[in-house]
Image 1: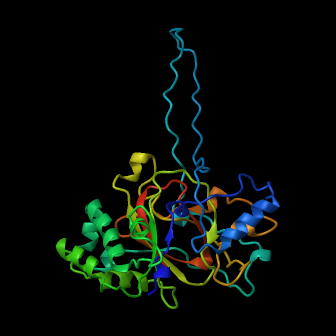
Image 2: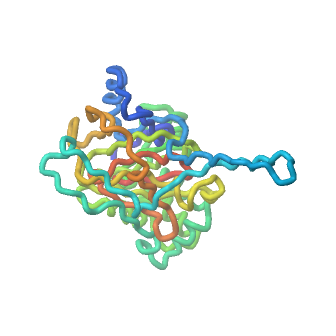
Image 3: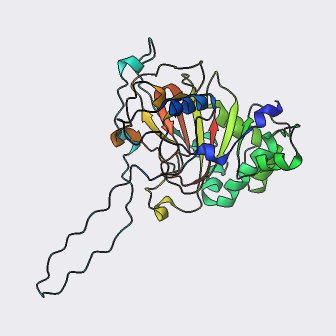
Length: 336
C-alpha cells in the first residue's frame, strides 16, 4: 500500500451540483469544459448548496368568511416536506438508444440491501452500531488508525488534517499496516465478537471480483439541500458497497422520511450507458449531447437506511447516482 492511496476528497466532494435547472437550457462551451475537467475526478462530485428541487410546494391556505362576520384566521404555515417514492416504486428510466453501450444488455438487477446482523451474526455488532452513536464514530476513527497511510511529502499538520473525521479520507482496504489492530481493540472493548480484519474484508468482499480495493469514508456535510449531479463512478459492470453511518438524531426530526438522507440517491437505468471518455472514468449524465434533461421525480430513488439494511450494494453500470438532495448522516463508507 502506497501513500498516494491516502489522498483526501474534501468534504465538499460528497455533495453534488446539477448544472441545469431546466432541460431546455444548453450549456456554454466554458461550462462544458468545466464538466469534462471533473470527469477524471474519481469521486465525480463537486460541492454546492441549493434549493431542494424535489420538495413539495407549501399547500396554500384558503379562507372563507366566518358566520360570525369576523375576519378569518390564517392557517399556520408548515414547513414543506419532500415527497419521496419508495425504492421499489420508482420507474426504471428507459435509456435512449443513442446513449446505450454497444451490445449492452437490459439491466434487471438493481440496489440490494445487506444486513450487519446477517454478515456478522451473534457478534453484537449490529446491536452496538444502532444503539450507540459514539461507537459508530469510534469505528470511523479506528479505521483511519488502521488504514490511513501518511503522505511523506506533507507536513505532520497536513496529514493530521487529512486523517481527521471531518475530512473524507480515501484508503486501501486490502491490507493494514497495523493488522487492523485499532478496530479489533475497539470491538473487544465494546463486547463485539469480531476482529477488525474480518469486519473490513467481509464488507469489501461484497464488491466481488474484480474490485478496486479502495474505501472512502465520505464525511458529513451537515444538513444541506443539494442539486443533483447524476453520474457513474466508472461505468464498469462492478459492484459498489456502501455502509451508512446515520446521524445521531432521527431523520423525522429534520422533516425527512425514516432512513432517508444517509445513502446516495439513484436512478435505475434500463441499459448501461456509453462510456464517453477513457474506460473506468466518471460518466456525467450532463455530458451527453444533446442533453436529455433532468430526471422526473418518478425515476429518482432514495434508498433507505435502517435496521437490517445498513448496507447497499449496486452495480455502477445499472444506475446513475448523486449525493442525497438533503443529507442527514454522519458519514457513508464506499467500497469499490
